[in-house]
Amino acid sequence: MDAWLTPIVMKKGRLATKLSAIVKSGKKDEIAGIILKETSSIGLRINSIDRIEAQRKVEKIKTVFGEINVKLAFKDGEIVNVAPELDDCKAIAEKRGIPLKKVCQEVLIKALKYFSEKNYKL
Image 1 (cartoon, one colour):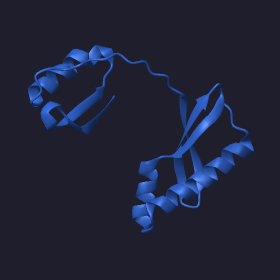
Image 2 (cartoon, one colour; image 1 turned 180 degrees about the vertical axis):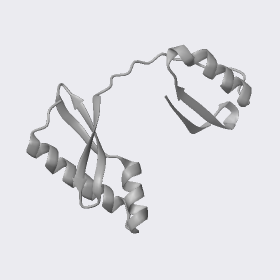
Image 3 (tube, rainbow, N blue to C red; image 1 turned 45 degrees about the vertical axis):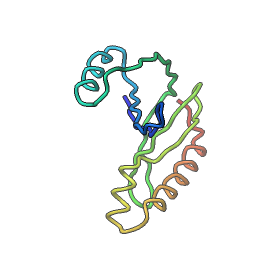
Image 4 (cartoon, rainbow, N blue to C red; image 1 turned 90 degrees about the vertical axis):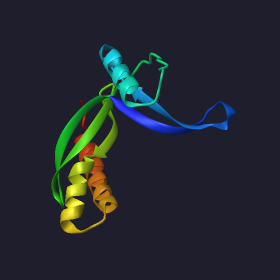
């Protein structure tokens, strides 16, 4: 589901890289096998974690750049996060030769206004 590398210092001051991975329990053995075969690791530490997810929905909104997907996250039926789809914004920025940051900001402003005017609820 997700993975990342973290530089760490081991005992005796040895530099190392920690591989962390979040895996669905049904895939644990498969992923462990891959890690053991493809890295220099000779053992894994496994911890169980819980996950709480917000409900999610993607909506298209009209902007000065055209229609863009916007991701919405909900908690108890209310919007708790609004985020423009980065790939959509990136494609527009590259096509028009403008900064990605500007596209994302414009889309976010439009989306916040749009959804607050609609009093949007899930």
